[in-house]
Amino acid sequence: MITLKNISFQYQNSDFHLEFSELAFQSGSKTAVIGPSGFGKTTLLNLISGIYTPQKGSVAVNGKIVNRMSDSERRTFRLTNIGFIFQDFKLLDYLRVVDNILLSFRINKAMTLNKSIRMRAEEIASLLGIEDKLNKYPNKLSQGERQRVAICRALLNDPSIILADEPTGNLDPENKHKIMHILFDYVKDRGSSLITVTHDHELLQGFDHIVDFKELYTYS
Amino acid sequence: MRQSFYLAYKYITFHKIRSIVLIFSIGIIIYLPNGLKKLINESEAQMLARAKATPLIIGAKGSSTDLVINTLYFQQEKTEGISMKTLNDVNASEFGYAIPVLSMFTARGFPIVGTDPDYFDFRNLSLASGRLMSFVGECVVGSAVADKLNIGVGDSLVSSPENFFDLAGVYPLKMNVAGVLDPTDSPDDQAIFVDIKTNWVIMGLGHGHEDLTNNYDPSIVLQRDSSTVKAGAKLYIYNTINGENMDSFHFHGDMNSYPLSSLIFIPKDHKSATIFRGRFESGEFTQQIIVPEYVVNNLLQSIFRIKQIFNTVFVLVGLATMLILALIVTLSIRLRKDEIYTMFTIGSSRLKVFEIISFELIILIGSSSIFAVLLYLLTGFFVEDFIQNFII
Image (cartoon, rainbow over all chains, first blue to last red; front, side):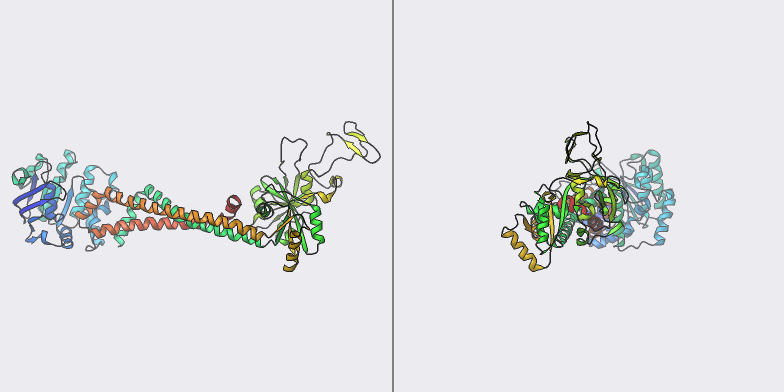
């Protein structure tokens, strides 16, 4: 269960102000977050993951208050609980696909990169149909393949929450549906929560809940 | 740490051209002051060693620097010469002995140095092949001359005419290579040694031609009486000296007045040197006598001042480079904002990002240092050329 209460958040040196009283996401549910650009949908994902902390209010995940954790605790929380997927994939161009998938294990002392993790990376790549692309660089892949790599990276640590920021925004219709099926199947199999920011209303029918930001909070 | 190094290494190797340009630029900045210091130090050592090994030089009054450079490095500066009479007078003084040096001409870019066999003993020059010159018209070449011109014993070299348009002037002389010297890492490697008389033949003071005693061709013999024969321009002058025409070579005029560039004087002992120098100061000799070590030392003092200016310039350039490097790192971090954000989202700490970027810098600066060390080691191989081309 993810609960955000009495949230007030403002970026430094910016007029943007996100404020709402309560928002909750059920464990194991698939939620689509919709709304106009600039309303703070991506900020919401960053608040849930603990990248940003609100000036007021609380963000609780499974009873733990994320915004009261120390930096290091929030990092560990993200590593063990969250899988991030971005619209523009955010793959590192200088790393091969396999190294991109394993990135979180290379940048965290808390996580040990061993043979079983490498095998798991290969398994997930195989599940997503990119097992033959592991030694390629991202610039040699199609958009759909890049997003699959990004999903592999997000799923490697078996997250209980998947935060996807317009994951199909750069994909053609065929790939768009394939990627969403992959995510839906994964969430169903593992019992994870999926929170997806999207502008694509075609995809909404696959979600359990829809949060429309326009109706949610006061934007100033 | 290992993982951070891995990511840094991947970043550097992926952006090959950018990294190579940075490595080269930083490497050159690291190398330049050190390389220049090595060049100057080794140049100083080598120049001083040759100067110290040459006790005294006697030459015409004028620039002592030109005289030393001409005598030690055969640079053929336009200095006043001295005559054979000076050599005879100096040798008659019994304070030591003198070795003549006459360096005025070149052959294929290398100086022709007229001297006598004592020079080879004095400089401890040994033969790699062949023998020393025994006849007029023979030469012994330094190792670098032999290498660069790909010549050896039995081959020949033609002296370069001084002026192509002076039809009555110096004719080229074809010289036979009698020997090749062992390398010495000194200007002797770059010289073509001949007997003084060979040099005089090149100057036109001596020559060989067909026998006119029994030649009655009016187009060649213009006038004849009981003691002299006057010949015209049609007379064939030999441009090579061999067994068949050697006897026809002869010199005209008083050989005591024949020119020399300078003399290397080797005194019997320190006392003899002091007394002998006094003779020059008292005016008994009209030439100058100099201690090459003092002259070279003065020359090096000037170089040392230039080195200090260079050092200051390099410190400033180094500082500017460091600032530019800092700017590049800052701009690079801005450009990599997305990448850094991605790392944060998947659990990286600021310290980890700092560690990765630090490793990138360490790899770049480390590689630049290795490049600089390689350049520094290479510098050692070019010291000789550097001295020949830039110092002298």
